Image 1 (cartoon, rainbow, N blue to C red):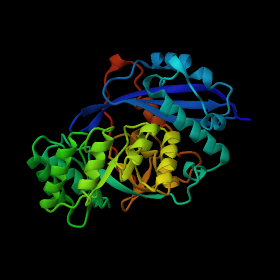
Image 2 (cartoon, rainbow, N blue to C red; image 1 turned 180 degrees about the vertical axis):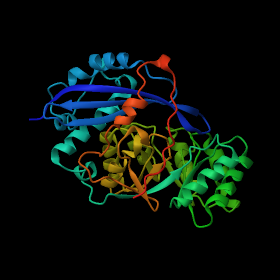
Image 3 (cartoon, rainbow, N blue to C red; image 1 turned 90 degrees about the vertical axis):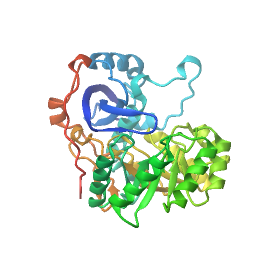
Length: 377
């Protein structure tokens, strides 16, 4: 029986190749940790944790905290058994692990379990078709108009025909201008999604969406138009704008996702995060006949869950400069993502990244990292 024997943590910090963000946040740096879980039969699973806004602690501190908080529950355990275990934490034990370790552990355990089975992760999860339709997402709120146009023109040239932009500016005219510029960049016939990141009240969301339509813009979905747990408000928006879908739920836990669906405040459930949580959310959506979209996952690892869940129509791709961290990134072609046919999730930490981009200490600051050109099959 395969058992976990040790872990390795590698810390990275580098500048993003563009400012990303939305109507609420602005991000210029990437702070990410890679977790490798090693088993006694030689198998290794890889997962990632990151902080969007602040540097992670020194690598030695990350290692210390992980070995204190998480490793005792892993050592000597079979990875496949851990991912299927039902735990009922209570009191002070009912809390997330520090620094996002929980998501990295889940990714690494699924990686190992699929490798043990000799299957790509999407097939281990029950999928049969590795191809998933993808949309180009700019995370573009803080880009200049010129950079915005360039970004989406390049995405269109790479074969994407669906695009999501950030809206939610205090000035409606700004939103309308960005929609016009997108049309200029990608041409007629494109599928368009917009994301407000909870910028509006339900009434303002309804007003804006009608204004977009009156200006001639056909919107597939509005993402997070108002506060995540305003179930009644989201239902009001859904009823008032039958010409656009409501895509929301990414910030909610599974219990709240169920309530969101039952309150009829969602047309397309947005999921991302731990593979285990994504699959549970997908099962929940299937119970109610609700469609699903996969939001951003690190290095597009979520393509495996997207390929395994029949309710998933879309995977988000945001052109973030992460690809140098792994030997072989995920592949895209003609507006689709393809789950790799390698055992596990198919990502392995790059030797060059360990040597050139690993940063053990916060004081070392940022190192430049290359842009991540899309990997075309």
